[in-house]
Amino acid sequence: MKGTLKTIAVVLLCVIGFVACKKDYKCKCSVTIDLPIVGTSSSDTTITIEKAKKKDAKSKCDGYGSDLNSQAQMLNGSASCSLQ
Image (cartoon, rainbow, N blue to C red):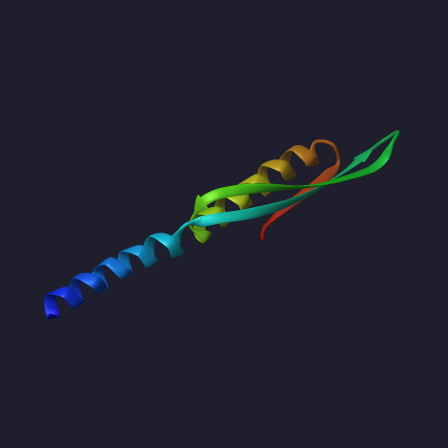
């Protein structure tokens, strides 16, 4: 009986661990660029980060924000991303 309970407990913990750890996250990014002739242009986009731990998804989203911001700054703009 104790062996069966231990086995069930281990299986349940493994299932919960796999289900709870990785999931899909949304990374929402906003870019604003100041164009000399046209004026200010803004754009929002959402990127899906699939099957990731929250910490890894946040790191990836922050990386997207950093890359976008570097590119936007070349056009006198800015960008930021946040994990949803």
